[in-house]
Length: 123
Image 1 (cartoon, helix red, strand yellow):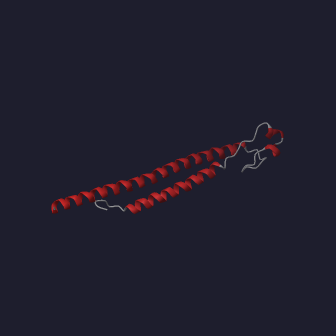
Image 2: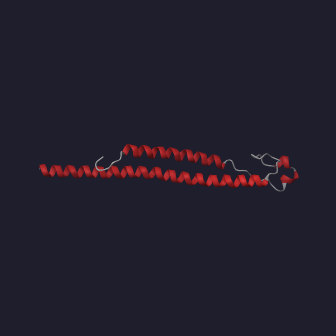
Image 3: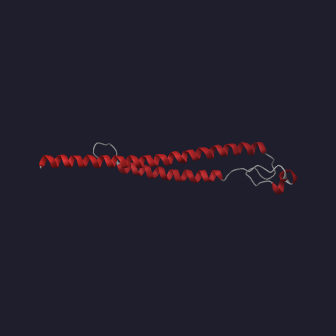
């Protein structure tokens, strides 16, 4: 590539790898979203705790509302961070692809100018 110290194939490969990472982040984000801990229903949960309590990582009848609330707060924060990571990884992938396109366009323009200059000098 004339005038640039980069390989367009490397830029495109990096863009593709970042896109794959974004896909993995998206899958992880979806998985974390599915690990939410529903709060026990205060009415049905107190009448028959074993029957109506949600099946969570904390069991059906442990009564660990504070722990489950802390877990849910942490899980929601992780989910939010994964969503942000997913967006920024996608953006970086698209940016690298665009940089490769721009470099290629500038390189092609430079080649055409050199060809015109060489043709003009010969003609």
